[in-house]
Amino acid sequence: MIFFQGVTKSFGNYTVLDNLNLHIPKGLITFIVGKSGEGKSVTIKHIMGLLKPNKGRIIVDGEDITDFDHEALRNYRRKFGMLFQHAALFDSLTVGENVIFPLKEHTKMTLPEMLRRVEEVLTQVGLSNIQHKYPSMLSTGEKKRVGLARALVAKPKILLYDEPTTGMDPLVSEMIDELIVMVNKQEKDMTSVVISHDLKAAMATAQHIVMLYKGKITLSGSSKDFAQSKDPVVRQFFSGKVEGPMEFL
Amino acid sequence: MESVIKKYVNPKTFIEYLGGSVVRTTESFGSFAIFLAESLKQVFKRPFRRQLFFQHLEFIGNQSLGIILLTGFFTGAVFGLQLGGIFRIFQAEGMMGGATGKALARELAPLMTGFLLSGRAGSAMTAEIATMKVNEQVDAMEAMAVDPISYLVVPRILAFTAMLPFLCSVFIFIGVLGAFFSGVFIFDVDQGIFVEKIVWLVQPRDIIAGLEKTFVFAIIIASISCRYGLEASGGAKGVGVATTMSVVVTLLSLLGTDFIITYFQIVW
Image (tube, rainbow over all chains, first blue to last red; front, side, top):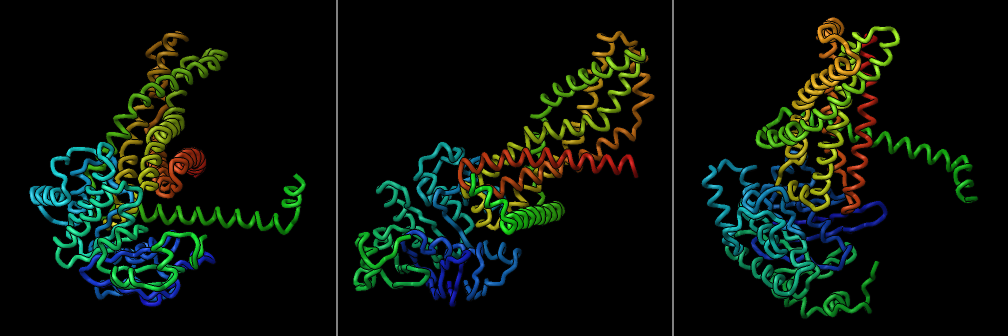
C-alpha cells in the first residue's frame, strides 16, 4: 500500500530519515513508534506529500508521489483522512460544520445527503446530537472523536493518526484505541497509520508495528515479534529505561 | 561591550551581517511576491466562496462603519479648524470647505481608512489566521486537500477590495460634514459659500484619485495580514509577534505606496 524506497530526509546537517525502506500493508492498523525526534511525524508528512524527500521514492496505492506537483498533491490528498494530535477542529465552525467541511469541499452530494453522512459518522464515533456545539464546548476526548468523524466522513482509503492518545488520561486513551480498532473493522480495506509513543497502545491495537531509530527501521513486524525481539534498542524502548544503547538528544 | 564592538568593527563580520540582511530582505520580498501572485491568481479560480466573502464583507464593512464615521467626522472637523485658522489670516475662511474636501478626497480619507481598517480588521485577520496556524488548523485544511489561500486569503482580499472604496467614500462625506460643522459654527462661514467652494475645488477626478488608492491599499492590507497569519509559529507569542508585525508592515507599506501612487497621479 505505502512504500518508502531508500528515502533520505535532512534538515540542514541533521538527517532525520536515513535511506529508509518502509512498507505499510493495506487494510491493517500500522503503528509507527519511536522516541521523540526519530522522524515519525516526518514520515507521516512524506506520506501526505507535505514534505519531499532529498533522496528516494514514495509509492502510495501504486502511484509514485515523489514528484507530484501542487495540484496533483491536492488531488492525491483526497484519499486521506487525518486525526491531528489536538484534533485541529476549526474554532469558528460548529461540530456539524467541521464534520461536513470535507464533503462540501470535495463532493457533489446534496445537503440532505451530507447531513445524513455527518450524523452517520458522528454516531459511529459515539457522538450524536452535538452538531450545534462549538469545539470550545467539548471535552478533549469529544474533540478527538469529532476530529475522527471529520477524518472519516469522506470515506478515506488511508486514515492517519498523529499521536492520538498523547496527553490523554488512561480512560480516554483506551477509548480512542478502541475507536481506532472499531473504525478499521467497520471501514473495509481502509489502511490506518498511527504514529505514537504509546507502546502499550501499539501492542494492544496494532496489527503491524514499525519502530524507527536514527532514521532507520529497527524492527518491523507484529506485536508478537516486538514482544519477542532481543534487539537491545527495542528492549530498552519496551522497558522505558534511560540506561541502554539508545542515544538521547 | 568590547566583544560587540569587535564583532561589528571586524570588516568581514560586518560584510557578512550586511550581506545576510540583504539576502533575507530579498528573500522575504520574493516570497511575498509569489504569495501575492498566487493569491491574485486564485481570485479567478473556482470554487468561489460566496458565503465567506459575505461574512468578511460584514466584518470589514458593517463592523467598521462606526469607527469610520467617528474618525471621519473628527478628522474633517479638526482639519477644517486648522485650515480655517490659516485662511482667516487672509480673510478667506470660505475656502476651508473646498480645501478640506480636496485633502480628504485625495489623501486623508484613503490613508486614514486604510490605517483604521488595518488596525481593526487587518490585525484581527492576522490574529485569527495565526491562531489557526499554530493550532494546526491550517495543516488540517491542507490535509483535507483544501488550499488555505483559496479558503482563507482570497475571500478576504475580495471583501477588502469591495469595502475599502465604499468606506473611503463614507469617510469623505462625513469628513466634509465635520469641516462644515467647524466652518459654519466656529468660523461663521456662510453655508452657501462653503458648499460652492467645495463644488468649485473638489473635482470628480480628485475623488477618483482617492478611490484608486483604496483598491491598491485593500490588496496590501489583506495580503500582508493574511501572509503574516499564515507564517506564524511558536504558540501564543508567535500570534502576538505576527499581529504586531503585520500592522507595522502594513502601515509602512501604505505610506510608501501612497507616495508612489500620488507621484504617478500628479507627475504623470
